[in-house]
Amino acid sequence: MFKYIIKTKVFLLTSFLVLAYSFNTFADSYPPDFSELSAKLSPAVVSISTTMSLEPNAPGAPKFPPGSPFEDFFNDFFEKRGGQRPPRERKPQQAMGSGFIIDGSGLIVTNNHVIEDAISINVILTDNRSFKAKLIGKDKKTDLALLKIEAEDTLPTVKWGDSDTAKVGNWVLAIGNPFGLVNTVTAGIISARGRDISAGPFDDFIQTDASINRGNSGGPLFNLNGEVVGINTAIFSPSGGSVGIGFSVPSNLAKGVIFQLEKYGKTKRGWLGVRIQTVTDDIAASLGLNETKGALISGVMPDGPAKLAGIRSGDVIIKFDNKNVEDMRSLPRIVAETEIDKPVSVEVWRNGMPLKLQVIVGEMVEEQEVSIKKPKNNNPASLEIEELGLLLSDISEDFRSKFNIPKNLNGVLILNVRSDTDASDKGILPGDIIIEVSQNKVFTPSDVEMRVNEEIKSSRDFALLLINRKGTLSYIALKLSKN
View 1: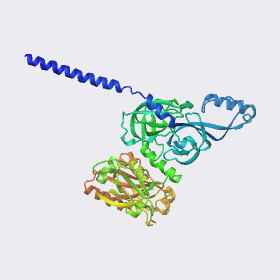
View 2: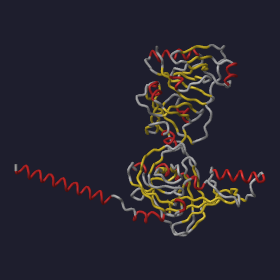
View 3: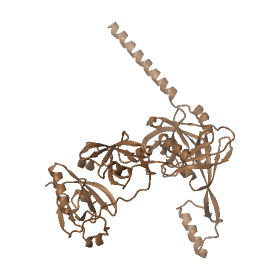
View 4: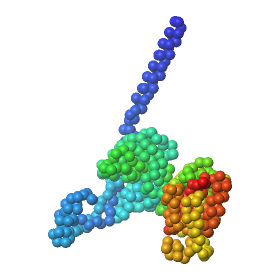
């Protein structure tokens, strides 16, 4: 009994000491002291002032926020007085932003939207020295720009960090010039990763609750090692001020863009030459994919890298250059970051199995329309495919005129869609053209019927249709009604 009591006391004492140590450790690290880090990093963060293109302004007329009812009132007032507003003078528009120095010779990173349409750019350092800046290059798709100033001395700099190692919950520090308040320091955590806010084709934003406001754009987001892990670019704000939701371009995306802007004055991105769409659960099931992943090829550009490599419409790219393609929007980023003229392996899903191909990455060009072979001119015949709930027809000259179908477009015309079907639920419309069924071209309603019957015999629950709607191609997986 005595031994038991001793052991219990030792256990309780040990537990107490462990808890006390843990509490003290937590107390020592929370909240962090950012003072030394702020003092060290702030000299490399700059204020950017731009003069934009001239904009008319009416002297003597009160100014109100755009959309304000008072603005409408005074507009009506001036128009009623004489049919027009008072004489207008043209004044230059000023804008403010932030940036940071990455090279002692004067290379400065900022957002493209900070300097876009600027007729002059001024950079102000923390010691209040002001310099005219030269634009080295800019990239709208990632909203990044590179500036250069000429200073007699070597300027303080900050280093890039590895944004891939930044985790949700990590502390971060934002330094910038919100509302023109120079060198404002705010702290917070990384709230989320991989945010797509529809700002561009390569969206992969870091979300943070570190306070970011207008004027912070182009400024750095630091980790606790003092490395730049993001460029503060956008905020979500119904009020116009910070509500704790800010977005930063990851440093690993920015580094490659900035390197190219410095070297070429523009970006040189990899190009595959395909149109892609999302792989849905239904499409995955229709193709025999065990997981809903990858990027579905809905079109291949003539003479593009994908075409030359043998990639086909209907393929699902699941790996590119040994990198997993988790979803549709990850493929453009992976391809864009790949070295031009580099031979890379591509793994596609085709006919129910993986297939490895090799493609030589090209340089990004403007998309071209996919060419389609000239159709046959058969007499019109209609057929209802009950399993799909579709009434189909050959494309006659009358139908071409009625539905405004180009002469060089072939396939099978959808005349009617039954309302109680998957086709209706997924937005299939009369006038749509079926180009393929289960990755096989179709030219007549009988071709569609044959392919649907094959899917049913193979115990498939869905048939994958390639639809052309007024020039736009998309894959839609339709559930087969087998009764």
